[in-house]
Amino acid sequence: MKALVFHRPKHVSVDNVDDPRIEHPRDVILKVTATAICGSDLHIYNGLFPQPRSMTLGHEFMGIVEEVGADITTLKRGDRVVVPFPIACGQCFFCAHHLPPHCQNSNPKHYGPEGGLLTEKGGALFGYTDLYGGYDGGQAEYVRVPYADVGPRKVPDGLSDEQVLFLTDILPTGWTAVDQAQLKGGETVAVFGCGPVGLMAMKSAWIKGAGRVIGVDIEEYRVETARRASKAEGINGAKDDPVEAIRAMTEGRGADVCIDAVGMEARRSIWKKLANVIHGQVGSIEVLETCFSAVRRGGMVSVVGVYGMPYDNFPIGQFFDKGLRMWAGQALAQNYVDELMELIRTGKLRTDDIITHRLPLAEAPHGYEIFNKKEDDCVKVVLKP
Ligand code: NAD
Ligand code: ZN
Image 1 (tube, rainbow, N blue to C red):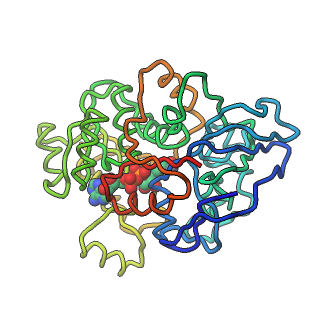
Image 2 (cartoon, helix red, strand yellow):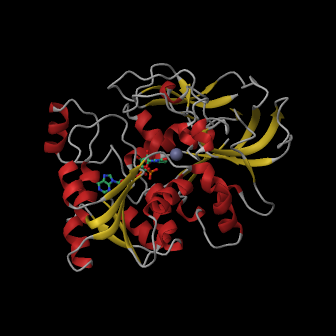
């Protein structure tokens, strides 16, 4: 079959690889009908998550069940499903505590070095490096789905692939960020990053009762997308200081909630880059620092942008002084996918309005290039194998 294979940073190609096969009675094989490129894929593409061997990428995919393992009774050949991106067994301590990205059985290989990239045994993700389990991803014609009685959700009739594809990741990710903030109603929510994840967080904030939603980015076309698709007030951080702007909009206090939907690949000044090199750090916590400054005292900072390694300049003094709350992590995707499917089915939530590029799988390398460089007004690329 054909698959998008990562070889080394900035080198991905569509190759012929072996077809996946059932390896465990709880597996299914899915014929992929739609799959998307994620900002998280860019961390591998740009070498911020090391991946020493070639591997098929992709954790945002859906399709038709082709073959089921002997223990699968919940799905049959021909069912159309979306698959949340964390691979979770449904039975371990962490799954029982509704923390699917921390499943203890899905990633048996990984015990990270102390002080290294990841410090304890964590869960697994589709197509996301050997550290996250080494599973092949779904930017391919077929994909093996482990624990298929836990993750996949059947798609109700009448909904198109594009309407439900983002249930795999970016929608539950944006939703998780807002849910962790526990809005009571009327809050000002500032979202840093008007990429796909930030746009979903803004849409989620409205549904969960925000009174005001602000989107911050450094690319004007993405700020414009936040205004159009997520009905946010926009701030271009390349032109205006977002902290000053947000304070000016909130009687000097700052936003009740700041969401970091950028992560370690924040584009930054040469001085910040140099400071990182001196500290031996890849990536930047620049946006996290900005969130700490733009949030009001007693407010909440919710982080879904990915930080892949320990950082030694975490603003603990500001965190303490302002009495903040904070949450960070992988999306608790399985917890929300049914509720979100229902919001889409009943027309209360729309997510396909951020798709800018639809490409055949063969053109996936071009998709990576424009999505990475923010060229051609690219916001979200959907691949059709
Ligand atoms: P993206 O690359 O499309 O979006 C990032 C946006 O941040 C871009 O629009 C970019 O212009 C903007 N940006 C860069 N530097 C900035 C700065 N200094 N100030 C303001 N904006 C800045 O990626 P995406 O798909 O939207 O993903 C965003 C982040 O969310 C990534 O780190 C990704 O890995 C992460 N993510 C996390 C989860 C999770 O479960 N926690 C799931 C999916 C994605
Ligand atoms: Zn993703």
